[in-house]
Each structure stands twice: as structure tokens, then as C-alpha cells.
Length: 601
Image 1: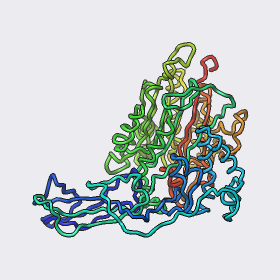
Image 2: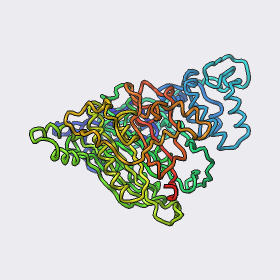
Image 3: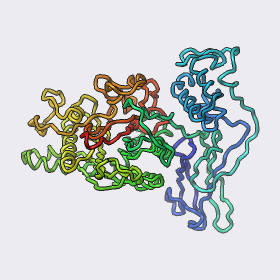
Image 4: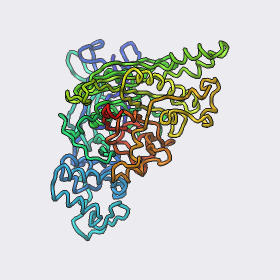
């Protein structure tokens, strides 16, 4: 007869909006063990599996810390508690938790006051930022000095949250094998029950197998990042249909390595909480983050083929995006092709139309290169070094901009966007440089065929000042650059060929360029002034540095604004991600551009 051997959940912490799918191992009538479902609609020898999900309710509901979701909250921010949109961010597990989160938390206050236009809110924000009586005593603007004395003005926090003892009640919330927790479940334990039932009588047979989850936590969300003007001029803007302020004739471009599910393994990131690595959690967070930026063009890296077709393309289509995709080649990678990642480029249909798509396969370029310059006896060795399955996706778009011509001459305004993910192996410096050079030569051909602005986005897996980065922004590489010493195949010789004619500039260098807007001091502190690049765009326990870039042709485009960078001080060092609120070990980069009039080109 059918029986249940074991049940367990892959993630110990349930999260609102993230589907829970238990692992159920059953023994079939033929004594074999299997994980296939046996639903009521297809019973096995007259028996099926019945599932139930319960919320274990009591008067002992626990409020969860918004920063450390595995911890119980003991304090609540008064300001946030009075604003429905901020309540989920109002809870903290300790004064130290709030102190550490203050720089990000006070941003929520400032933006809430600005959006509501409420004088009382504005006064409270100014009162808090000066450190006068914020926490039942004194609190500096940097939250470095905290006094929890009971005297002083109205406390920023109320008393600690209390619990009462009492009985428990099981409230049925689901009757399928899977269940997606809702906001009503926050703070409660869930109970999963699986039992064999008779197909005719519907009566259960034997004792049910059950499992209890940890308390349900809200899906963490990152503090909003602002778009910072950098051109020093006040540009008249308009509200688009999404309610976003955008300068007339400008457009925004997002680049983001989302960390594929196959790369986010517990073996690689054993120090990261399993719930924060799980794809069921990250996909919801990623979609919410990407859609929230409302970029006109979105360049994603490490998008698995199955996730592109099943999740990203259909979900972003609902928000007005058309999708294009190029999967990595799979000559090196093994396993299911659906799990192989690639580059995905999305654009808003109301802002752009698709003109042309180019796929760049570095494997094919490697084949051509070895045929041309590598002796036959060394071809296998050369291909083993060069064939790494990396690709680039190049898209040519035509700007619509609300059907208003960007160019006074009436010519079509075309824009070329390249999206790439360069080889990750740090010892293969020659391969990285060769891949970047190959991409640039292809872009030069496109530029030669049309007067067209070019954007080059992606994860280049190379640091600022490296040979690939130098080639991109300088148009050449110094023959004495140390990276050129790694060239066992001679593919970089003669080194004078390592040039290109595209006037590429890194978008984020606008934060430190002379003549940019005032008030950028705090953003310049997040930049490396030696390389004019962000201090980091990639964060793991073992590495903090910059691998991601948005480059643009400076003779055809100008930067209007940039998405603010993160502070290194705010990073969580105990996770593979910048913090559990973020869903990748990379941060998103976003820039707003304006096409220059053709008369200035």
C-alpha cells in the first residue's frame, strides 16, 4: 500500500510571496521509493496523498525584525509605524540593529516626508536628523551616540513588544502540496501535513506526516536608491505614464548581473542564509527591484534560459517590455541547456522599437582565430584556453520618445546597446582582453555604418585599470601593462592592434568629472578617485570590487543622472549578497542619457 516515508522543506524560513514546495518521499505498492505526486485525480491502487497547510495561530504572534528577519523584533520606529507603506520597515531587534541601519533608514523618513508634503513629517525628519531626543534621549545624526534613558522628549521607539501565553489554533490556509505565504502569515509558524487517503471513502489511512516551519517573515526589500543628477543643469522634465519624472528626450539604461540560480549554490555561498539564496525568494525580489527602476532599457546578465522564458520575459511583458535573449554556447558547460545562462535585453515598447539584433559568440571567434594564427599542433591547446562559452548580445533600437523626434533634422534616432558577460576566470587575462577587443571591433563596424550612439553594458569580470578596462576607456593598452605578460598563445600580438576608435567613457565617472553638479560629495566618497569608477559593484565574503560597467560614446550621448551607489559600511559581511534585501552579489547600475544634437557631433 502507498505510504509516506519522509517529508521536509528545502528552506527552513518561509517568506511572504515565495512558494513553499515540500519534498515528499513515498513508498509505492511495489516497494519502490519515489517523489512523484499521487493526487486524488490519479490514485495509485485506490489511494492518494492528501495535503493540508495550517497557520498555527495563538496570542503569541511574534513581530519580525525588518533588518534581521530571523530575529524577533523588540523595538518599533514611531515615524514608520504611523505610515502604512513603512510599517514593515519599522521593526528592529535591538537598538544596535537600528543604529547600524540608520543611514538607510533615515532615507525612508526623508522620502516619506517629501512625497507626502506633510509639515509635521518634515519637522520630525529635521528633528531626528539633528539628533534631538530621537530615542528616549539623545541620538546623533550618524547614530553613533545612543542613550536609552527613560527621560527626555517623546521617544522615537515605544516600549518593547510584549508576548502573552495562550492556546494554539490551527487555521487551514491551503489544501495543495505547495503553498505561498501571505502577509497574514507573518510572525506565525506554518504546519504542513501529508497523509494517505482512500480514494473511495476519502478517509485517511494511518498517521499523517507533518513538519513545522520557522515563523513566516516578510520579504525584505532594499532601501530605495535615488537617481542623482550629475550634469549640473536643471532639465525640464515630464511625468510619464508610470508617474516617473523624466527629462524630455532622455532615456534610462539599467545593467544588472542577477546571479543565476545555478551559480547561487550553498557550496559556493555556504555562509549565506539558505532562504536568501533560494530562487523562490530571489526571483520575486529581483522582479520587484527591476520593475521598480522603470528603466527604458534593461540589460541583465546570468539569466538562465528557462528563467528567461518562464519568468522574466512574460513578467516584464506585463510592464510594457519587449525581450531579446542570447544564451551562452554550451561547448564547455554540461547538463541541461535550459539551466545555461545568458544575456537578456529588454526595452520599453512605448519608448523604442526593435531594428536589429546581433549575436556575438566568442567560441566562433576563437575557432576563426585558431585557424588563422595557431599552428595545427597547438590548436587543441588554444581552443581549450579560448572556448569559454561567453557571448554578447547587441541590439539596435529606434527611439520613439512619445513620437516626438529627438533630432531636429527629422532623421531616425537609432541607439546601439551591447550587453555582455566576459569570462570569469581571473587567471585568463589574455582571454578577457581578447573577448573585449573582439566585441569592440564588432561595435566599430556598426558605428561605421551609421551615425549611432553606442552603449556597452555588462559584467566584464575585470577591475578598473586592468587591460580590458583600459582598452575600453582609453582606446588602447600600454605595451608595458602587466596584464599583457599573460599571453601564452600569442593572441595579443602585435600589441599595437589592441586599439579601437570608439570614444567610450564610463557613465559612473560622471560622479567625479569636473563641472558636474553640486552636492555630489557623498556620492564621490563611493568612487575610486584613481580610476573614476565605483569602489564596488560586486560583493561576496571574499571579494569587494568593481566588475560591472555602463560605457557610452561621449560624442553622441551625455549623462543626465546616475543611480546612487551603495556604501561599503552598509554591507552585510555574513552573506553572499550586499544584504538579504538584495538578491544578487552584484548591484544594479542605472544611468540616464540624452542624445546630443547632430550639429554638435
